Image (cartoon, rainbow, N blue to C red; front, side, top):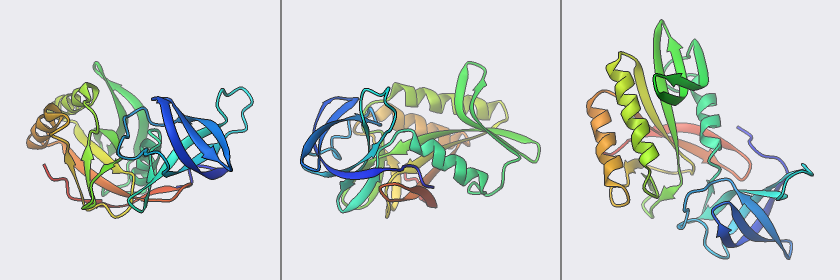
Length: 228
């Protein structure tokens, strides 16, 4: 899936806050919007190569969005909006093992709001999507990179939906090539891992989806084991 146009290669300088980064583009320091509010400490290292998407919207405060970074020799997409877009394309094409009759975004169920609802052969279900940008030297992925009570809440809601006889899934979209597995980051947030293991025991489908990543494209290519 082509996500971006007008991409420029630059060097990351520093991040003044979670929304703003300063980068060196063609010898000029430019201020960029960071499309990922996570910590990303393992990715955004001063001097590393990044890719910026240029906007032609004159109303914007910043001219560029920081969307990708080079890490360990790979391009990593760090746009937090991208995983839902590529999951939607993948699921609609049969990536889940079937072509859904309907696929809708941002659907409310009780007090919950899920990223997607799906229907197939009269069976309804829900899916939550989590973008993953934390990887180690052995090409393993981990989530989250920071404590996420919101993420724990989402898993509990998927368990409740499953217990109400809906299909439930959580898909970890791994935003880099050559990843071999994904696991909960128990060191950073033990409660997330415990809740994910509980969801697995209750029948929630847990998926690790690897993406082929370039500075302007992101496409789910295959799935890998989820090691709990």
